[in-house]
Image 1 (cartoon, rainbow, N blue to C red):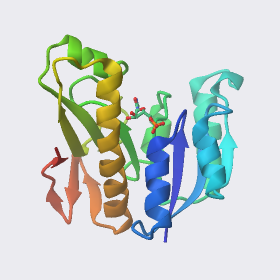
Image 2 (cartoon, protein in one colour):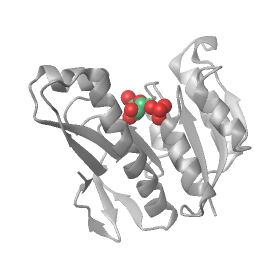
Image 3 (cartoon, rainbow, N blue to C red):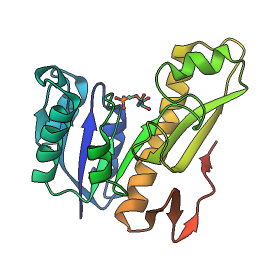
Length: 210
Ligand code: GAR
């Protein structure tokens, strides 16, 4: 089984989708640890319920981003993961950190990247009058929300859509594309070559679900 460490900051519904895949035997992984930068979040409960070791590393207790990232890195590496998964982890990472896990760290972002990097993606898509929105799973590089996209899920934005209804719609698809990506990686089918994600050595047709 492939060792995976998951980083979270909140509810952890994406973590849950990956736990479910692990427990059903669909994903050939072992989640070695869940690390949160916030205490008392629901994602930590989800991990504990699945008997997964947890760590809280509060970014506010560090004098710099570099110091926080070094502690995070040391904690992750204790578990010797082959894959690091950012599942709603809401901290910007240093280049030292992203380079250390280059090609073996993935993130899920709630937009059709390269559109709407950063925060408040659902509201921004509505305000722009977009017909569609979605989520992207990508390899993490030093560029914020900028690494090679692996798979996207696309949803229509309805007339009466609010940021909350749209977020809920997108989240349902996140729970499909994120475990799918973890499965590909765990099966050694997914690689990052330069600025491209490859599945079975070939560039991906990114829109896997819509
Ligand atoms: C998800 O929608 C994820 O795409 C987003 O946070 C949410 C976490 O939900 N991530 C980001 O915005 C990263 N910048 P969850 O804790 O229930 O998985």
